[in-house]
Image (cartoon, rainbow, N blue to C red; front, side, top):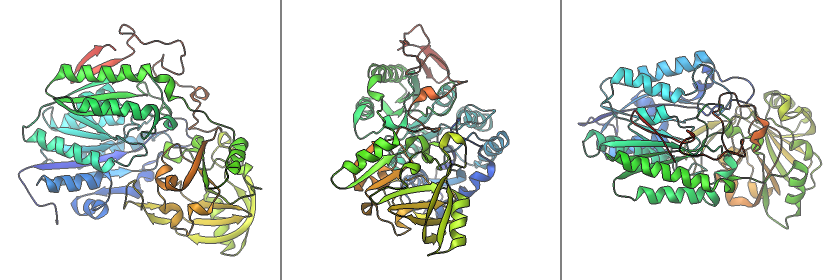
Length: 514
């Protein structure tokens, strides 16, 4: 196969990527992963060659390092509800079975916040099964999303963990290259990775994890400084995913050094303490929908993005919340909203381009995300919903919104999709002939990742306070598995070395401490 010539080292790549929202309606089935189910050398290269994805990074790094790449199964699906038990079992079996027995090491591409009814930690379970098959000496380097809920088992069973450094996630390619290089250096005997893990005992909402500014930026700078210490190979800061109800949810750190266990432990503990001291800076102010719209309209000029984070598709929400939509039906300026509603999209197709649309939109998943809103308008465009990422996030990745329609309702432009679509890339509107600068208001069902689609056009952004399974107010949720106490749910909680509030883990050894 072109670009994957045989060489002295044979490395495998495989992965399952899913971010699970324990509070989202419905379940995630095996069929939901079939849209991106890639296995084998030819299929893997055809799908990911020349893309700025994790998989593209592994392809390029393997070629640069003159290694033979042996792709196993890679599959992913849009963040969503709990993964069904049978689906999780099938996925784990397929992943482990797909790793070529000829491989000398593995790059494992995972998210870090997948949950099923029988496994709180499927990533850790995958590593456990891989170790059972290939042994303790088989090098495994795992890449994770910045929103991973990292468990001590993940940190203990992987030789190294390399997490994204950015949110929006525009460095997944670079981190996969880094992970592949660490694996190759390990196989060549150039380094002997030792990792340490620490948990900050903090739940942080995605809206507070923008890495370009604010508290998360400061924390990442501390991590980068730690990476420059002699002997440190990688520092991973995981902001965590507070909508996965698992024992170890929340912000955590993994530091990997070249054989220096004490240094790894010290760096991880220092970062966790630094984050705790600045926990108040990870708070977010949101305003109700009507106020957000009024503030947007008060801007003299430019496009204002209303961040409807409670219905964050990228966090597993249904994408059909109507709390903001219901306030836009009489909007006096051009506004754009994307709603996932297969039934409404089908009605638009039935009406045809130029036909009249008159029906209920959104609010079909559950009552938490609002009631259906009656809209009347004209069908402007019908599309198959296929597009390619053109922005900095997963450039070149194929995407699909399902049958998609544009309905014009006065000054409000509504895009009806049949599949949930996160606003991660400009292509999702550009492919429909829409241009962000033409709108005074854009509703983004997103916390932060909308910036890779609309950031260049936004004169301002406003975080909207509305109900939903990704709300920034974590007190709305009833956690059953999360280990308490934890900030901010337990206001009087102060971690100490004796309270087991921070657990450090290093290759089988457990230590407590700040």
